[in-house]
Image (cartoon, rainbow, N blue to C red; front, side, top):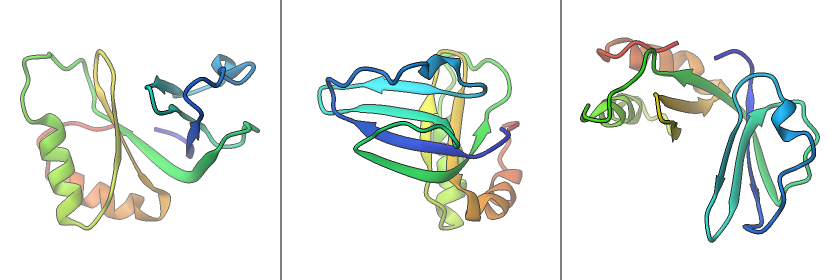
Length: 119
């Protein structure tokens, strides 16, 4: 996925930042009883409790059937074996993996042997 991303945390009852949905590219919103998590392209000014920049994203190609087993396990195992931590997000259709930008090349090598196609 092009560009770099921020992973941010807000209070669980915080409103979404103004114009959040107008961002180009990947954005994700997850609200729980404990937090509101946002993932969005770097370069946006958003007032957050905590924000970590410098993530790059990989998207599993194609639509994944809910009956498929072990997709994230295989991907995370390959990254773990290479000493790379990840931040994963699943959507209805597919999975997204984020790693720190300084580990992107190593992540590509680690994921190269996994029998799943990544963008």
